[in-house]
Length: 292
Image (tube, rainbow, N blue to C red; front, side):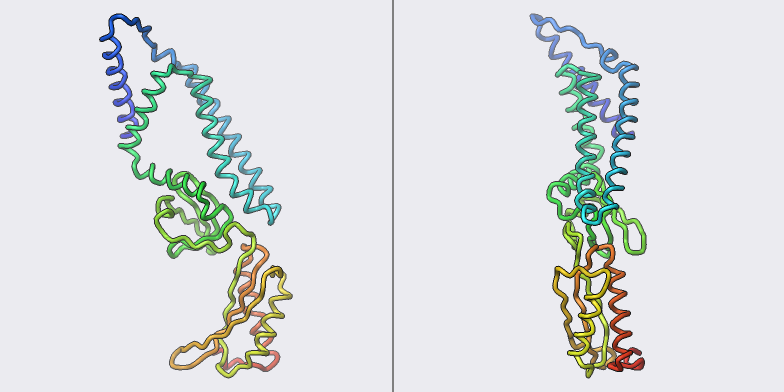
């Protein structure tokens, strides 16, 4: 309501000022502009009709693109990254077409309206403008895309939508997190895959300090190589570090490998932990007491 009041107040004030300026020049004859001819009821109804059609078209096109994106793992991230750009371009084209084809206002009215909108928006929607500007910068700078997995603060999940006001991510617990775009521009964002389909996953296993590292490394690498989630074009690494827990030394094993699809990162991590521990137990390298 505040935005609408400011808009119409500024709009009519500028029209009155323009009328006073034109009447001062008695030598120039000005043909008065009928406001109700430009914004007639029929034109408003046509605008609403085209809005519904364009909204339905963009929604249908978005669903079609998302359907094909989900059908192809390799093309999922590029297609989903293109959807926000396409949506903004279509809405911009719709607005320009409505103004030029249906209303076609004189240049004076168009400039006055744009000035009124700019002033009203500047007063009433400062926070919204910051988020919209942040959304536009995200689309141009592209620190992440739809389909990427990012971490913002304590929240980690897959980006499912980049809007003009906010970005939505889904966490591994299937929770929707809505992050204002300006907050994304002013904070650290960690991107797990940076537009790529594959990403690195680290599976950790705590072992006794005297466990045979050579045998464990061989078992872990073989377990990763036969996994259905593995991306073999990237290296597999097994690293060991000494950890102190409750005044005892332990061997912390990290199995680093890449999954073929980032959506399988948690399945791969769980699979590697389960397979490695089972194999170590079956070969007698560790016993159940070592895992307590």
